[in-house]
Amino acid sequence: MRDVVFTRASGWIPTVIREDGELRLMLAAGADANHDPRTFTFPIGEAHLAVIREDLARHLLLWSAVLPFCDAAGTRGRLDEDAAVALLDPVLLSLPADVDALFERIPWDRSRLVAHGAHIDLLERGQVCASMREASETPDGRRAQAYSADRRRAGRGVVLGPLDAAILSFTGQYLHGATIPRRLPDAVDPALLSEVMRVIATAEQASSGMRIGLDPRRGRRATDKREWDRVAEAVEAAVRGAHPELVDDAVRTVSFLMCSEVADRTRDLPVEDEAVVLGDHAGARRTRLTFTDDKEVEKRWQQGGPRTADAEFWEFVADRSASDNEVFTIEDETMGEGIQLHFYADSIARVTTLRKGVGGAEPEYRVEYGLVDGMSGYRTVVSAFVRGGCAGLDQHGPWMSDAAELERARRRRDAR
Image 1: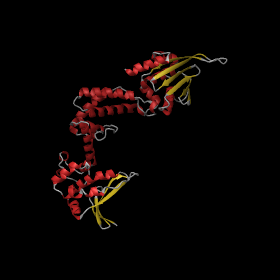
Image 2: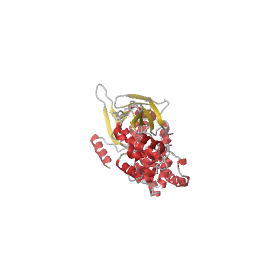
Image 3: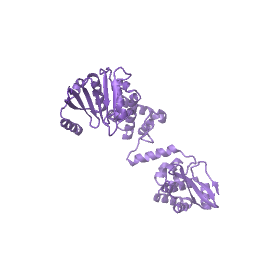
Image 4: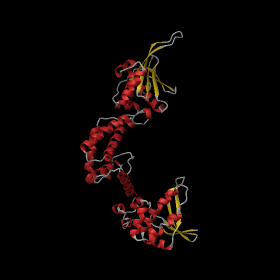
């Protein structure tokens, strides 16, 4: 038989119950293997109940001190009741100075106290009792999140100035750096908004005209990392030059915002439209092409269909590319030409048929190798081949006839 003896307005603050005639403190904390909240109880006395009823601050301090034991219990373990009971008198019945001294020796949940109104400066100085004088039953979860975020930054040696904090709030990344950035002017103190917008204007100017295309090698919606990094470097250099007082966290969040916005200009466009955005306006001249991957999967394209050869090929790559499938081929059987793309090495081979096999004789091919500058380079050579065959690739060399020479060139490039 369980009866509620005392509870507060916030359902998460521990409740006093009477179970089988015994007073117990009940609290929900952590989660079980099914991600449902776990409930723990441990015995208390009448004197403890009296303090819990009358003193919200002591009640919250006890909760903060007991929570680490709940965390230690994990998803299936038992609460260490003896350890929890041992905290009752020191937290609830001791003098404030003794409580402060206790909290210097034991683990406790800071964010819980901050959420319920703890004075942060006093809390940081170890005056936990004094910090809870204006404690509230109603929690402010966002205040606790901001406190935790500031502590994480402090652990990295980062202290935000007012403008730094305003910029992080503007992008929505004050609490969580992994959050996708966006523009939230209402989250900024109006007195600082104009300064924030000057920083944003600097970043916009630095990234004006830049593009971040898709990278089909990594799936249908992945962005080109090299182009992303290029935009990020340009923005960060400009912002640091114009606003040297900003900390790195603020500069990076502006860079992240600009890169996200630049990428959004093309991310949702079909591949054909993306090619137009990237400056490709020519029409295809091949009439029939065959695409293959390293798993011997084949796809055919023929002129007159609804999509360009480029679009069909890069869609094939997006669907098939994987860590164990990084070699793709485009072949024009009619012309006896083809190219092979080596995504693992940023290189390409062009193959020209010099003599077809007749009467059982083996055909003769000329194979030439070249280096490719990332995804934009691959787009260029694919487009050039589709429109002009192997001859259309002449200007995209140098071309090497020896695979060993290609490997030496690749190593020299990577060393740079």
